Image 1: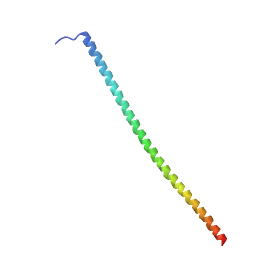
Image 2: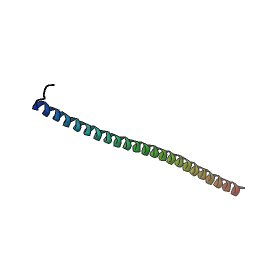
Image 3: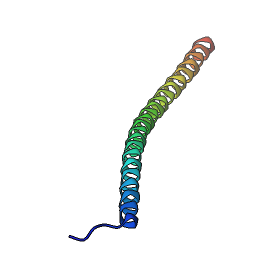
Image 4: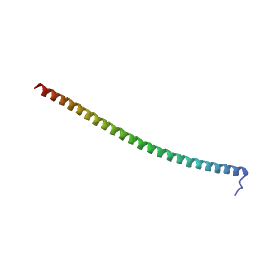
Length: 88
């Protein structure tokens, strides 16, 4: 088995150091990706919650508008009835 030269040893050490560096970068990137996925999930939940709140507000607005319209009609009918009773 031929002996390795000093240059080969240095190159092997540099490659080992590069492998460790790349493994560390990969671990960091994986951790960051998990953070991004968690933030995206949170954001999606927030969007769904806001959409539900918006729809609830729209329903409440329609209900209040209908209630207001009913009160206007009732008021108009009451005035019309009172005018009818004074004419007789």
